[in-house]
Length: 255
Ligand SMILES: [Zn+2]
Image 1 (cartoon, rainbow, N blue to C red):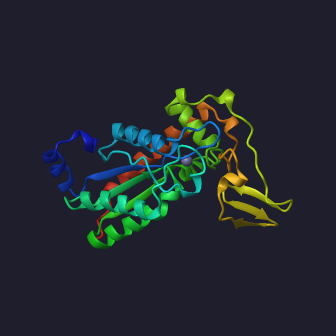
Image 2 (cartoon, protein in one colour):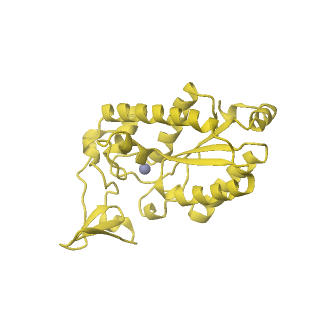
Image 3 (cartoon, rainbow, N blue to C red):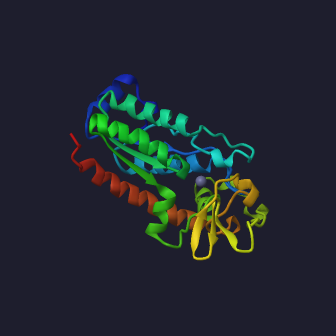
């Protein structure tokens, strides 16, 4: 069930039921490497939640297409809300739905930069109302379901997902090589904002475009993306999220 398709009287009835599971898809509009679309982080949660809705009784809010993308603003098309604004956005969504009774929230998130904002606004709500809030970061869960679905940013994992859900957006033949400007002979990038020095990783606070000029990095190169990977991975993620939703629906509320 889509919140956007209900009238307010229908929404009032649905939200007043403490067993209603509200699902919030959230992402970001930001660079996703040389061939990944800017909407990758919200297109995927929107697709996942639409598939969940076919298989289990949930109330899905409109997708939140913007997030915390401060590291990516040197790349054209990125729209960054900043951390404080994103906390306000999440707080607004949680609080306005909870005001009418909602107490079970699943956030299906496509972007790691949003985690602190979702956790802060969610913890406030949990303390005020006893609501249960959970955060499903699909890209991090996928490699736990199958370790070959390794994760990075704007890399083969995300591009493969888009090749399955919106194949017309990917032209794999046009994908250039990833280039990396390592800091030195001893400091090699292992993720957008981290380098390896000896046996350990160091976090780097700097514009990522200087180190990773194409933007996509961290997992397997985008050139190796394929639709079959995307299909298998997205199906497994949806199966897992649906099973989790059934368990989540039965949990006792905190008060
Ligand atoms: Zn992403």
